[in-house]
Image (cartoon, rainbow, N blue to C red):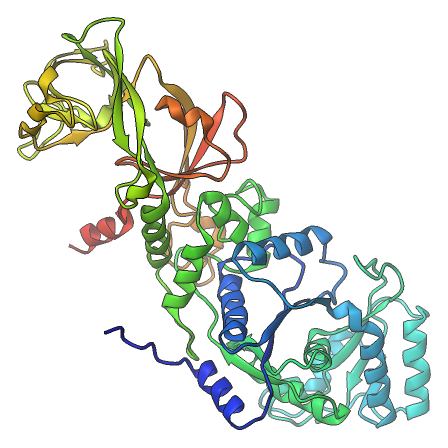
Length: 556
């Protein structure tokens, strides 16, 4: 029997709302700010908002919170849309907070007319003093009791651009003694003479997030406005605006954001890494951005699986990044075609194999998916093997090549190591072996018992490629913990470039974005930096969780 998955708290709320007839259907939204690229934390919110709407037959809007023109860019808008589509979701409507600038302005005017908002000439420092502290009530400033007529005149003058940046704000008139600091006359509008990516220079006053957020939800008739836990203290203000304006009563709910170890999720910090050259860009495969994960070879299925596994909670916790790696490893194991690639090659010469001869070996494409069939791989007298697959003096449980030892070459013959050569520095340069002709895979004589199998590439037919091996971007589980600079925790070994790996010849036809398992090495994807004759592969993840092994050693 399949165990039925229990409902999370948001699903329980929605099902109760639908039973009670509170809404005919549900409507959610995903409201990113177009001031950076989305990261894996946003993926959790995307999966949640779109997933809930899909489960209950509802709709989800993609609404850009474009209320701060100084930090926004159309590049970010386009990247966000690409990321949402790539994750497998389709929005009902593409909307922008800027669509509502005129309506939001009218709402602000209504609050002024109702005596619930005023224009304040105070500086940011003066406003902070007026608000008081969490243990002391605030004190009214000199502009709090301006007349409605004066406030309407000044607010209109603000809109017309008659005042410089920072000289005036529009504030809600609520309660300077409220226990919740967000209710102590919050700012609704500020003056910013800045070009907006959609409205151009039509506006020089822009609403604050707290004012634009709830009203945008209401305008769109969002039934369940889902935010992260840090917005809990904002909810009374969200509700206050809706109540005072007598508009559609959207409701805000909060869940725990995604926190991953060995990762930073702050857009400000990610931007710092980009601008200061610690990474190659927002889509650097070491970045936790969705575009970075995509370039690294992660699949949308693996990210959706990860978001499903971690669930939805009301309490903050830290998720081990190895779970994300497990999810992509599980999915790639099912779909990735197997190929042979030698990353640190040494020559293996089969001394009894005829010179100038080659033959084709039949090797399976993916043992997890028989429908993918087999491929033909060229075999010859001289092969490339991994340097780590030969030991001059083997340990007791060594089952790969060593003097006198036998191994099977994957999909081909069994070989016995006879001899080897070194250079002047003692490095192995060549291994010589004899092959057993009757041991070819699939033949009757192939049942000779050997304990080890290694991969190989025909030296005559091999192509070369650049392979980029990635490790975690940070060495610390909590980068920047305490007062330290998070950049001091960067891993100097997070990228290793192998300029001349050798691959089986069929890989010359690989397409950008195609995913492979390099047998015994890990999962890889062809990168967009590739050119004809110069392939570049990114390592997505190792075959096993090597970090878990190291952690066990350290704890032993």
